[in-house]
Structure formats: structure tokens, C-alpha cells
Length: 191
Image (cartoon, rainbow, N blue to C red; front, side):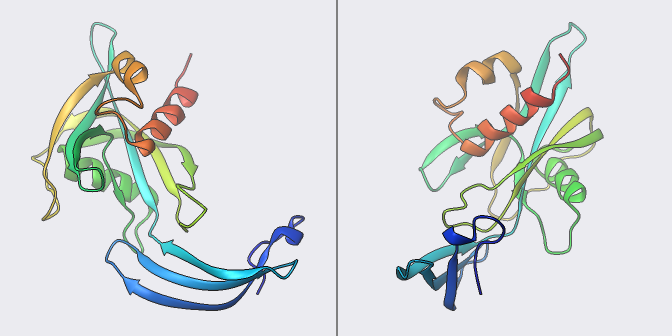
């Protein structure tokens, strides 16, 4: 089986063997033995993850200012608190828009009057299999209290758009998926 496809087939690698090493809940760790067109071979470690959803909740204020509804939470990988857009995994069999609505409601207690996909990207195709889809959520209405997963602890806050734009990549605004979601939003926002 060739693991590429199309006009770049000469860059593809043929998979000889693949085995599941461990299922870790939010991803599977797999090891694959692959051979290049030039005969190079080796083992590659891959994370098979479900697709992700990012939601950019936009609050239009009467004074003309725009703010983002964001969440603040501890991130175990870096052992620090970050500020991010609501996000999560797409559950098996769940439609993308449904996942975006669910994550927004669960993490913030808000519903979106309108929701539109503004982009998708592969988080890290070097070793990950999934997509991250980003939705813009507008005409927000506070609907209920947060309904967090068992091990989630987060706070909801609003951030002025200029603050996030100038601060992205620094301090609490260090999450790469938040950076990407912001870029999708800025690219899709009306002039």
C-alpha cells in the first residue's frame, strides 16, 4: 500500500506493517514500518486522533467593540494556565457543526445564533492523522451553566480582539490552535 497519492507518488512510502501500541483515550499510538521509493526504511510512530473543533465566539458590543468569548484553563502538557477558544474532540458519528455547538455550550454556557466554518487544518501531519475545524460563532446567547467534562476546570472570560491580536503567541495566549483559529477568523471577517 502506497501512503502518498497523486503526482507526488515518488515521495510516498509503502507501508509494510502497522501495529497498535496503545490506546490512550484521546488518541491511539501506532507504529508503522514503511519503505520509501528509494529503499529507505524505518519505523514511524503515529498518533491517530479524532478530529478537533475550535470555536471562535464573537461578541459584538453596542459601543462597536468586538470581543471574543474565551476560556482560561490549566494545560497539563506545559503545566501552565492558558487562554484559548472553546475547543474539543469531535465524537464518533457527530457532525462537525454539532460538535462546535456542543463544545461552545459545554465550555461557556452560550449558544450561537449563527455558526459558520471558517477553516480547517492538519495540526501536525508529521505524526498526527486528524483535522482541526474552526467555526465562527456569532449572535451568542447565554443559555445555561457550563457542563464540563469530569476532568475539566475552566473559567469563561471575554477578550478584546485587539488584545488577542497583539498578544497571540505570548503569555497565556500561547496555544497554537488558538493562533490558527484567530488567523482563520481574521481572514474571514468582513472588511
